[in-house]
Length: 368
Ligand SMILES: *Cc1c(COP(=O)(O)O)cnc(C)c1O
Image (tube, rainbow, N blue to C red; front, side, top):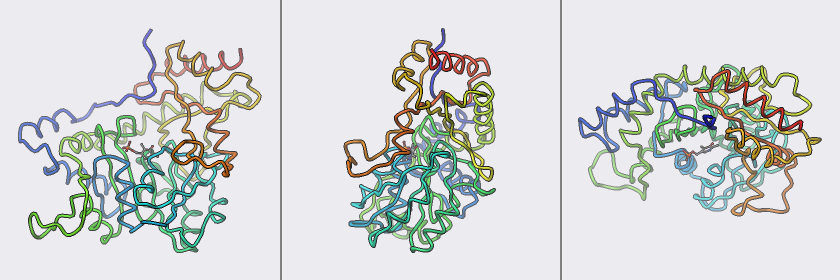
Protein backbone atom coordinates (compact mmCIF):
# COMPACT_ATOMS: atom_id res chain seq x y z
CA UNK A 1 0.00 0.00 0.00
CA UNK A 2 1.15 3.51 -0.80
CA UNK A 3 2.25 5.46 2.25
CA UNK A 4 0.37 8.69 2.89
CA UNK A 5 2.87 11.46 3.61
CA UNK A 6 2.48 14.53 5.81
CA UNK A 7 3.45 16.95 3.08
CA UNK A 8 4.24 16.93 -0.62
CA UNK A 9 5.17 19.87 -2.80
CA UNK A 10 3.31 20.17 -6.11
CA UNK A 11 4.94 21.72 -9.18
CA UNK A 12 2.24 22.16 -11.79
CA UNK A 13 3.12 25.60 -13.17
CA UNK A 14 6.11 27.04 -15.00
CA UNK A 15 8.72 25.87 -12.46
CA UNK A 16 10.76 23.81 -14.96
CA UNK A 17 10.57 26.43 -17.71
CA UNK A 18 11.83 29.17 -15.36
CA UNK A 19 14.56 26.95 -13.90
CA UNK A 20 15.77 26.07 -17.38
CA UNK A 21 15.94 29.76 -18.18
CA UNK A 22 18.28 30.28 -15.20
CA UNK A 23 20.59 27.52 -16.40
CA UNK A 24 20.46 28.52 -20.06
CA UNK A 25 21.22 32.18 -19.33
CA UNK A 26 23.73 31.53 -16.54
CA UNK A 27 21.82 33.69 -14.05
CA UNK A 28 21.95 31.23 -11.16
CA UNK A 29 23.00 33.38 -8.19
CA UNK A 30 21.30 36.35 -6.62
CA UNK A 31 21.06 38.51 -9.73
CA UNK A 32 18.49 37.80 -12.39
CA UNK A 33 14.98 38.66 -13.40
CA UNK A 34 13.15 36.15 -11.24
CA UNK A 35 14.39 37.59 -7.94
CA UNK A 36 12.97 41.02 -8.74
CA UNK A 37 9.78 39.67 -10.24
CA UNK A 38 9.14 37.34 -7.31
CA UNK A 39 9.62 40.21 -4.84
CA UNK A 40 7.33 42.54 -6.79
CA UNK A 41 4.57 40.00 -7.27
CA UNK A 42 4.79 38.83 -3.67
CA UNK A 43 4.42 42.39 -2.37
CA UNK A 44 1.38 42.79 -4.67
CA UNK A 45 -0.04 39.53 -3.38
CA UNK A 46 0.26 40.68 0.26
CA UNK A 47 -0.89 44.22 -0.50
CA UNK A 48 2.36 45.81 0.76
CA UNK A 49 4.65 48.33 -0.89
CA UNK A 50 7.83 46.29 -0.53
CA UNK A 51 9.10 42.74 -0.33
CA UNK A 52 12.68 41.59 0.29
CA UNK A 53 13.64 38.04 -0.66
CA UNK A 54 16.19 36.03 1.31
CA UNK A 55 17.56 32.51 1.73
CA UNK A 56 15.00 31.06 4.14
CA UNK A 57 12.25 31.87 6.61
CA UNK A 58 14.58 31.88 9.60
CA UNK A 59 16.92 34.57 8.28
CA UNK A 60 13.90 36.55 7.10
CA UNK A 61 12.85 36.79 10.76
CA UNK A 62 16.41 37.82 11.62
CA UNK A 63 16.26 40.55 8.95
CA UNK A 64 12.96 41.88 10.38
CA UNK A 65 14.47 42.10 13.87
CA UNK A 66 17.74 43.68 12.73
CA UNK A 67 15.82 46.07 10.51
CA UNK A 68 13.94 47.29 13.57
CA UNK A 69 17.17 47.58 15.55
CA UNK A 70 16.35 44.85 18.09
CA UNK A 71 19.52 43.99 20.03
CA UNK A 72 21.15 43.20 23.35
CA UNK A 73 18.88 43.27 26.43
CA UNK A 74 15.74 43.78 24.33
CA UNK A 75 12.77 41.48 24.79
CA UNK A 76 10.41 40.17 22.14
CA UNK A 77 7.04 38.67 23.04
CA UNK A 78 5.95 35.57 21.12
CA UNK A 79 3.79 32.48 21.54
CA UNK A 80 5.33 29.52 23.39
CA UNK A 81 3.72 27.26 20.80
CA UNK A 82 5.57 27.86 17.53
CA UNK A 83 8.38 26.51 15.39
CA UNK A 84 11.79 27.07 16.98
CA UNK A 85 12.95 29.54 14.31
CA UNK A 86 10.71 32.23 15.82
CA UNK A 87 12.64 32.10 19.11
CA UNK A 88 16.06 31.47 17.54
CA UNK A 89 15.89 34.59 15.38
CA UNK A 90 15.51 36.69 18.54
CA UNK A 91 18.50 34.92 20.12
CA UNK A 92 20.62 35.73 17.04
CA UNK A 93 20.15 39.41 17.94
CA UNK A 94 21.26 38.85 21.52
CA UNK A 95 17.72 39.63 22.61
CA UNK A 96 15.38 37.54 24.76
CA UNK A 97 12.28 35.72 23.57
CA UNK A 98 9.45 36.03 26.09
CA UNK A 99 6.80 33.35 25.82
CA UNK A 100 3.02 33.66 26.09
CA UNK A 101 0.46 30.86 26.36
CA UNK A 102 -1.99 29.95 23.58
CA UNK A 103 -5.71 30.54 23.17
CA UNK A 104 -7.57 27.26 23.69
CA UNK A 105 -9.62 27.52 20.46
CA UNK A 106 -7.29 28.99 17.84
CA UNK A 107 -3.98 27.72 19.34
CA UNK A 108 -2.55 31.18 18.57
CA UNK A 109 -0.93 33.59 21.03
CA UNK A 110 -3.46 34.62 23.70
CA UNK A 111 -3.65 38.44 23.57
CA UNK A 112 -5.14 38.60 27.08
CA UNK A 113 -1.85 37.22 28.44
CA UNK A 114 0.48 39.61 26.60
CA UNK A 115 0.36 42.71 28.78
CA UNK A 116 1.52 40.92 31.94
CA UNK A 117 4.76 40.04 30.07
CA UNK A 118 5.62 43.58 28.99
CA UNK A 119 8.62 45.12 30.76
CA UNK A 120 10.77 48.22 30.18
CA UNK A 121 12.92 46.03 27.87
CA UNK A 122 10.09 44.89 25.59
CA UNK A 123 10.54 46.14 22.03
CA UNK A 124 8.22 44.03 19.90
CA UNK A 125 5.43 41.48 19.73
CA UNK A 126 5.95 38.66 17.25
CA UNK A 127 2.67 36.81 16.68
CA UNK A 128 2.77 33.61 14.63
CA UNK A 129 -0.12 32.72 12.31
CA UNK A 130 -0.02 29.12 13.46
CA UNK A 131 -0.87 26.34 11.02
CA UNK A 132 -2.22 28.88 8.53
CA UNK A 133 -4.60 30.80 10.83
CA UNK A 134 -4.07 34.50 11.55
CA UNK A 135 -3.52 35.57 15.14
CA UNK A 136 -5.89 38.16 16.65
CA UNK A 137 -4.14 41.10 15.02
CA UNK A 138 -6.48 43.95 16.07
CA UNK A 139 -6.02 43.10 19.71
CA UNK A 140 -2.24 42.62 19.29
CA UNK A 141 -1.90 45.92 17.40
CA UNK A 142 -3.96 47.70 20.08
CA UNK A 143 -1.63 46.45 22.83
CA UNK A 144 1.45 47.27 20.74
CA UNK A 145 0.27 50.81 20.10
CA UNK A 146 -0.53 51.41 23.77
CA UNK A 147 2.98 50.30 24.83
CA UNK A 148 4.89 51.66 21.78
CA UNK A 149 5.99 48.24 20.53
CA UNK A 150 6.66 46.97 17.02
CA UNK A 151 4.60 44.13 15.56
CA UNK A 152 6.44 41.51 13.51
CA UNK A 153 4.25 38.85 11.90
CA UNK A 154 5.73 35.37 11.57
CA UNK A 155 3.61 34.37 8.56
CA UNK A 156 5.83 31.43 7.55
CA UNK A 157 2.84 29.06 7.54
CA UNK A 158 0.13 31.38 6.29
CA UNK A 159 0.67 32.82 2.77
CA UNK A 160 -2.69 34.21 1.69
CA UNK A 161 -4.49 33.85 5.03
CA UNK A 162 -7.01 36.61 5.75
CA UNK A 163 -7.78 38.57 8.91
CA UNK A 164 -10.93 40.70 8.62
CA UNK A 165 -10.52 40.67 4.84
CA UNK A 166 -6.85 41.73 4.94
CA UNK A 167 -3.91 39.55 3.96
CA UNK A 168 -1.40 38.49 6.59
CA UNK A 169 1.95 40.09 5.89
CA UNK A 170 0.35 43.53 5.81
CA UNK A 171 -0.89 43.68 9.40
CA UNK A 172 2.17 44.90 11.36
CA UNK A 173 5.39 46.89 10.78
CA UNK A 174 6.98 43.97 9.01
CA UNK A 175 6.28 40.29 8.26
CA UNK A 176 8.23 37.17 7.44
CA UNK A 177 7.41 34.23 5.13
CA UNK A 178 9.07 30.87 4.40
CA UNK A 179 9.23 28.85 1.18
CA UNK A 180 10.50 25.60 2.67
CA UNK A 181 9.33 22.47 0.82
CA UNK A 182 6.31 21.83 3.01
CA UNK A 183 4.93 25.39 3.18
CA UNK A 184 1.90 26.73 1.27
CA UNK A 185 4.18 27.46 -1.70
CA UNK A 186 7.85 26.56 -1.95
CA UNK A 187 11.11 27.69 -3.53
CA UNK A 188 13.05 24.69 -2.21
CA UNK A 189 14.30 26.93 0.55
CA UNK A 190 13.55 30.62 0.69
CA UNK A 191 12.18 33.52 2.68
CA UNK A 192 10.50 36.87 2.13
CA UNK A 193 9.97 39.97 4.23
CA UNK A 194 7.06 42.32 3.50
CA UNK A 195 6.64 45.89 4.74
CA UNK A 196 5.17 49.27 3.87
CA UNK A 197 8.14 51.16 5.33
CA UNK A 198 10.67 52.43 2.81
CA UNK A 199 13.25 52.96 5.54
CA UNK A 200 12.95 49.37 6.78
CA UNK A 201 13.01 48.08 3.22
CA UNK A 202 16.28 49.88 2.46
CA UNK A 203 17.88 48.76 5.71
CA UNK A 204 16.96 45.11 5.19
CA UNK A 205 18.24 45.19 1.58
CA UNK A 206 21.55 46.52 2.86
CA UNK A 207 21.75 43.89 5.61
CA UNK A 208 20.98 40.92 3.40
CA UNK A 209 23.54 41.87 0.74
CA UNK A 210 26.78 42.18 2.77
CA UNK A 211 26.06 45.84 3.46
CA UNK A 212 27.22 46.79 -0.01
CA UNK A 213 26.55 50.34 -1.14
CA UNK A 214 23.93 50.76 -3.82
CA UNK A 215 25.99 53.57 -5.38
CA UNK A 216 29.57 52.33 -5.21
CA UNK A 217 30.59 48.80 -6.18
CA UNK A 218 32.49 46.72 -3.60
CA UNK A 219 32.09 49.49 -1.05
CA UNK A 220 30.56 48.14 2.17
CA UNK A 221 28.76 50.51 4.50
CA UNK A 222 28.01 48.15 7.40
CA UNK A 223 28.70 44.58 8.53
CA UNK A 224 26.05 42.78 6.55
CA UNK A 225 25.13 39.19 5.80
CA UNK A 226 24.83 36.99 2.77
CA UNK A 227 21.14 36.21 3.15
CA UNK A 228 20.35 36.44 -0.57
CA UNK A 229 17.87 34.28 -2.46
CA UNK A 230 19.17 32.75 -5.70
CA UNK A 231 17.54 33.34 -9.07
CA UNK A 232 16.90 29.57 -9.17
CA UNK A 233 14.96 29.67 -5.91
CA UNK A 234 13.05 32.72 -7.15
CA UNK A 235 12.28 30.94 -10.45
CA UNK A 236 10.52 28.16 -8.55
CA UNK A 237 8.95 30.57 -6.08
CA UNK A 238 7.54 32.81 -8.82
CA UNK A 239 6.08 29.86 -10.72
CA UNK A 240 4.47 28.68 -7.48
CA UNK A 241 3.14 32.16 -6.72
CA UNK A 242 1.46 32.23 -10.14
CA UNK A 243 -0.49 29.15 -8.98
CA UNK A 244 -1.08 30.20 -5.38
CA UNK A 245 -4.88 30.39 -5.66
CA UNK A 246 -4.88 26.76 -6.72
CA UNK A 247 -2.54 25.75 -3.85
CA UNK A 248 -4.74 27.53 -1.31
CA UNK A 249 -7.97 26.10 -2.75
CA UNK A 250 -6.54 22.57 -2.46
CA UNK A 251 -5.66 23.18 1.21
CA UNK A 252 -9.24 24.34 1.81
CA UNK A 253 -10.58 21.25 0.02
CA UNK A 254 -8.48 19.00 2.27
CA UNK A 255 -9.60 20.85 5.41
CA UNK A 256 -13.26 20.57 4.38
CA UNK A 257 -12.82 16.83 3.84
CA UNK A 258 -11.33 16.43 7.34
CA UNK A 259 -14.36 18.31 8.69
CA UNK A 260 -16.64 15.97 6.79
CA UNK A 261 -15.02 12.72 7.89
CA UNK A 262 -14.39 13.79 11.49
CA UNK A 263 -17.92 15.08 11.94
CA UNK A 264 -19.48 13.91 15.19
CA UNK A 265 -16.13 13.10 16.86
CA UNK A 266 -16.09 16.17 19.11
CA UNK A 267 -15.86 13.94 22.18
CA UNK A 268 -12.64 12.39 20.81
CA UNK A 269 -10.83 15.31 19.20
CA UNK A 270 -10.57 19.04 19.30
CA UNK A 271 -9.55 20.87 16.14
CA UNK A 272 -8.23 24.40 15.62
CA UNK A 273 -11.27 26.67 15.47
CA UNK A 274 -11.31 29.42 12.85
CA UNK A 275 -12.99 32.68 13.98
CA UNK A 276 -15.73 33.98 11.66
CA UNK A 277 -13.63 36.98 10.58
CA UNK A 278 -10.59 34.88 9.59
CA UNK A 279 -9.82 32.73 6.57
CA UNK A 280 -7.22 30.07 7.30
CA UNK A 281 -5.05 28.56 4.56
CA UNK A 282 -4.92 25.29 6.56
CA UNK A 283 -1.19 24.65 6.36
CA UNK A 284 -1.76 21.71 8.66
CA UNK A 285 -4.88 20.09 10.03
CA UNK A 286 -4.48 18.99 13.64
CA UNK A 287 -6.42 16.95 16.14
CA UNK A 288 -5.96 17.30 19.89
CA UNK A 289 -6.91 14.04 21.62
CA UNK A 290 -9.45 14.49 24.41
CA UNK A 291 -8.12 14.06 27.93
CA UNK A 292 -10.29 10.99 28.58
CA UNK A 293 -8.56 9.02 25.80
CA UNK A 294 -6.32 6.45 27.48
CA UNK A 295 -3.89 5.87 24.61
CA UNK A 296 -0.95 8.23 24.52
CA UNK A 297 -0.47 10.53 21.57
CA UNK A 298 2.74 8.71 20.62
CA UNK A 299 1.00 5.31 20.63
CA UNK A 300 -1.72 6.68 18.34
CA UNK A 301 0.94 7.99 15.95
CA UNK A 302 2.79 4.63 15.97
CA UNK A 303 -0.39 2.72 15.20
CA UNK A 304 -1.26 5.15 12.41
CA UNK A 305 2.21 4.55 10.97
CA UNK A 306 1.34 0.83 10.86
CA UNK A 307 -1.57 1.83 8.59
CA UNK A 308 1.03 3.55 6.32
CA UNK A 309 -0.04 7.01 7.39
CA UNK A 310 2.61 9.52 8.41
CA UNK A 311 1.71 11.87 11.26
CA UNK A 312 3.71 14.38 13.22
CA UNK A 313 3.44 15.77 16.72
CA UNK A 314 2.20 19.32 17.12
CA UNK A 315 5.11 21.69 17.92
CA UNK A 316 6.66 21.38 21.37
CA UNK A 317 6.36 24.63 23.32
CA UNK A 318 9.64 26.54 23.48
CA UNK A 319 9.97 26.58 27.28
CA UNK A 320 10.19 22.78 27.59
CA UNK A 321 13.06 22.35 25.08
CA UNK A 322 16.76 22.59 26.03
CA UNK A 323 17.66 25.97 24.45
CA UNK A 324 14.76 27.76 26.12
CA UNK A 325 14.06 25.51 29.09
CA UNK A 326 12.44 27.39 31.94
CA UNK A 327 10.80 25.40 34.70
CA UNK A 328 9.31 28.52 36.27
CA UNK A 329 7.00 29.01 33.28
CA UNK A 330 3.60 27.40 33.16
CA UNK A 331 1.71 27.42 29.85
CA UNK A 332 -1.17 25.02 30.48
CA UNK A 333 -2.93 25.56 27.14
CA UNK A 334 0.18 25.24 24.95
CA UNK A 335 1.41 22.27 27.01
CA UNK A 336 -1.95 20.50 26.64
CA UNK A 337 -2.07 21.06 22.87
CA UNK A 338 1.52 19.82 22.54
CA UNK A 339 1.02 16.74 24.72
CA UNK A 340 -2.08 15.51 22.95
CA UNK A 341 -1.83 17.16 19.52
CA UNK A 342 -1.22 15.40 16.20
CA UNK A 343 -0.77 17.02 12.80
CA UNK A 344 -2.52 15.09 10.03
CA UNK A 345 -1.30 14.73 6.45
CA UNK A 346 -2.08 18.04 4.74
CA UNK A 347 -1.19 18.67 1.12
CA UNK A 348 -2.74 19.32 -2.26
CA UNK A 349 -2.47 15.76 -3.62
CA UNK A 350 -4.64 14.06 -0.97
CA UNK A 351 -7.77 12.53 -2.45
CA UNK A 352 -11.14 12.16 -0.74
CA UNK A 353 -10.38 8.45 -0.48
CA UNK A 354 -7.09 9.17 1.34
CA UNK A 355 -8.78 11.41 3.86
CA UNK A 356 -11.67 9.01 4.45
CA UNK A 357 -9.07 6.28 5.11
CA UNK A 358 -6.99 8.48 7.46
CA UNK A 359 -10.07 9.44 9.50
CA UNK A 360 -11.39 5.89 9.62
CA UNK A 361 -8.03 4.58 10.93
CA UNK A 362 -7.71 7.43 13.40
CA UNK A 363 -11.18 6.92 14.89
CA UNK A 364 -10.68 3.15 15.07
CA UNK A 365 -7.28 3.46 16.79
CA UNK A 366 -8.44 6.06 19.27
CA UNK A 367 -11.62 4.21 20.29
CA UNK A 368 -10.09 0.73 20.51
C1 LIG B 1 8.86 27.16 8.73
C2 LIG B 1 8.81 28.20 9.78
C3 LIG B 1 9.84 29.15 9.95
C4 LIG B 1 11.19 29.08 9.29
O1 LIG B 1 11.25 28.83 8.00
P1 LIG B 1 12.53 28.15 7.28
O2 LIG B 1 12.32 28.59 5.88
O3 LIG B 1 12.40 26.69 7.49
O4 LIG B 1 13.76 28.71 7.88
C5 LIG B 1 9.66 30.16 10.86
N1 LIG B 1 8.57 30.24 11.62
C6 LIG B 1 7.56 29.33 11.53
C7 LIG B 1 6.38 29.49 12.40
C8 LIG B 1 7.67 28.27 10.62
O5 LIG B 1 6.68 27.36 10.55
